[in-house]
Length: 208
Length: 225
Image (cartoon, rainbow over all chains, first blue to last red; front, side, top):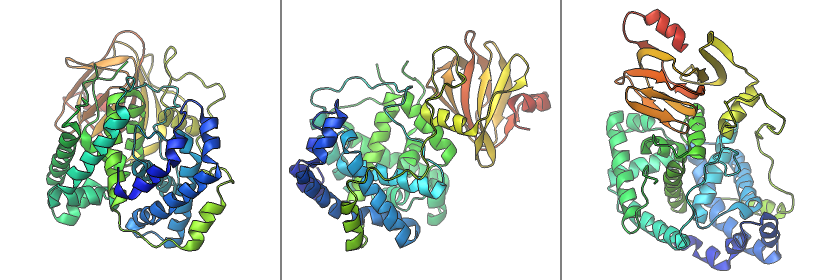
């Protein structure tokens, strides 16, 4: 668990949102109780400045970014019944919403969503019972592996995620061949995956 | 059906970090709808985004912005800048049998209103979509079983997602959900599998390079002229 979101998790805000994933209306109603509003307010205080920092990275206009920050936080609130803590940490969930809303705006087109309600959706194998625990452990291992990446790899990951740069643009900035950037990305992702797989391997591409 | 040919990590990372092009994002998200393994990998790439967001330098958000968020909680979800098209009305089936297009592709086709155009009578039809990669239009291609695509390679990258039927490139077989990636070093020798029509979503970032003397014919068949 991120230290910064520990108190949010402890407040049970999305614990309640998650109470009965099979019944969105019930979970929705629970999220709208006054107690949840104060927990949500804490979440806004925590994430709004970070989301704004993320959206400002490309030199965007501050007033426009404020609008998107509001949209992002209100989307988080309105979609809490769809949030599944077994699959993603709350920071990951907020990140994906911010990314999608921002791209919708700059592209002037809807960013394609990978949506479980898609009629073509191919479901994953049923979750193992200890999945929530596994997700927590993965999150901790990911954070520690990220902090241990060599600077030359960490820099590229940061540029890709937070300066919104393509691998080609990163290569130009650093005066490196694209191939070198690609291989550093591969090395970094390899290390992160190794860290994630160290206890409970999840095969990629090897689904039985 | 679980796909056997997947997307590489760097493509998934580009998608997850939000710096991809629209055309490739459509292909990746459609593959993720069909492929639990890549979905789980993409979720991890998004978790990297979550972890970096957590460490993000914080920007000043005015009290009035926070207040405005908290005052709007009863107003319902914020409107989408670009809502998805309504696909509840009956559509002309775009795939053989009961198969459905993943929403990212279906939305694009519905919005464009484009229909199949014959490229080779009785063999190949295509829909040219209002979306391009480096100026090369993205296409939905529908080919009859048994059709043989002349040997060719690509000046840039080609990504194809199989939506129905299947094809073989040499010995290697591809079916619904599978992705084939090719670059300038690959030479393709493609035969459409017998049986139902093969429908592909194809993103190229440069024209095709036919191999051998039939080049004009090949280019015409492959639709890159």
